[in-house]
Length: 309
Image 1 (tube, helix red, strand yellow):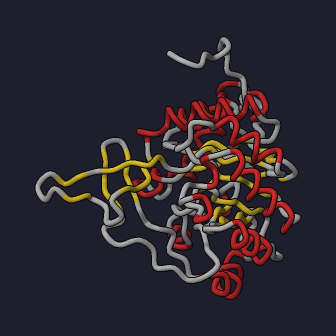
Image 2 (tube, one colour; image 1 turned 120 degrees about the horizontal axis):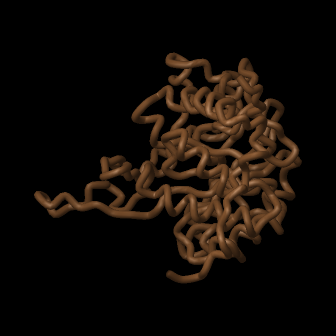
Image 3 (cartoon, rainbow, N blue to C red; image 1 turned 60 degrees about the vertical axis):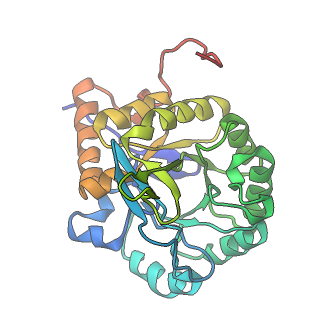
């Protein structure tokens, strides 16, 4: 078999492979079903500064080709993270990525500084959350609010800073460039797509929060398109996220320009899917005579993309 190098470079970080969980889909319980240290990185569930119970139930509903959720980022707060969560992950070798969120720039900056602790490898800023200072629109909806919050976050930490973008914007490239200009070290493309579902028997929304985030295979073409756009527009690495469940999905995102990928909804269906994808990627590369990810990343052969169909 051809020797392969699965290592993925995300800025100054080198991961042993490009497969990691999407925030909110990964927990300590998965240690019961596979060795978590096979992963390229551990990405924890998003935390907020204080305690938060989340949105009203029901919070999740099945959809064709995916699921929709309105969890509402329940959080046990910074103290629990520091005293309970961080010590648990200290025994693992894989890099620890902490996802954070807040509803104002000041709160975001404060939390970023407080989670910049020994044992944390990188910070993922979930800037897809509502910004109360911008009428509830997500920070990453617009370039100006993206630049403002990432600038403040960058000033609070020396750790690698990853900005998680939203697909719910008409300016994905401009937002990505704004995050890069403000000091982000990598982009995660992208979070869930805002959607809605109605129970026709009761005529009520199927989610307690009325609307929620769509994830799973149905959103993969959108996430793949955004990954391609952002990778072409920016010099910092892009981490693809959205509907990744199979080896073909992983390879597509790499060809489109992603340096690594995050797996989310597929883990709910098959808890060992990430470990399987790592093994399948290594086998496929060996069979193809491909020695490293650099021979795959960004190798799409396509004409200059148009702006309309």
